[in-house]
Image (cartoon, rainbow, N blue to C red):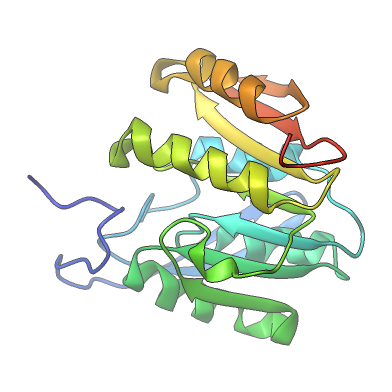
Length: 203
């Protein structure tokens, strides 16, 4: 089986590169590399997610499957009082995310994590997810499950997923885990879902 971006420790030869992007009014210079998701630049789905989400002004936010950290790098600037934890299973992605968010200081942390395991007992107000489709449905749906339990009551999971990658079935599954699921963005086949926990996230 060929290696892909969900590999824990990529073996692809390192080929670091810088690229520039502008998203949600923020100009970024980001470091990327071989063996990580969307290595050549900001992908359409992630851009749509960044442009769609609404976050609490001073909330605690998790970027699950952060890749090289573009979501946190952008939105931590849009929401300058938020605190962030960026998580990815890919060790190379984690190293890049650290580099790409260093200027934001201590309010942005990065950790290698299988799903939300590194979150520990912390409870985020929001979780952002562009799911690792190539890792398989079981991995993606486990992330949905974990998010539904880890969020604070009234917390929100934001998900972007393409219709051809199972947006409809993902919506059906999310409906069984969250109190309210809304499609709040749609463009070029990508759907953005806003998934709200109830007063008791266990229910």
